[in-house]
Amino acid sequence: MGAETAHESEDFVVLTGEPRLAFQRVEQPSAGKNRLHLDLAGTDRTTEVARLVELGAEVVRNHDVDGFAWTVMRDPAGNEFCVADAED
Image (tube, rainbow, N blue to C red; front, side):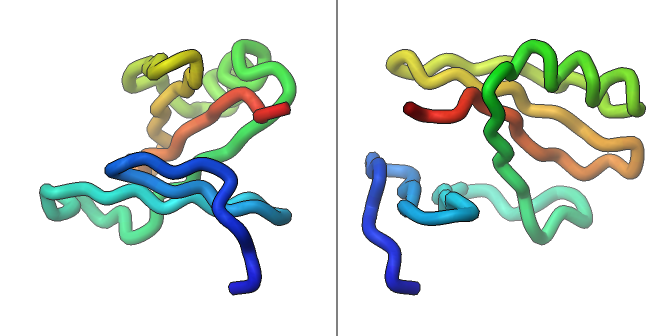
């Protein structure tokens, strides 16, 4: 893809470039119809999560690992996606 690695750990890798792509290893098979899980980033995660809730999404859970925080959300059709703060 011509991208370099921006961040890497045992279970996921984030590539450079736009749009930024991240791939995460998951052991369990998908329980639902989600074949693609989007991880989105913005400048103000709290405001964006509130905006998405107003549009019909729901918060599933929040994570913070080594200072990298994100919110797992579910759209009205049941598809999960994540919203994170943009990296500097």
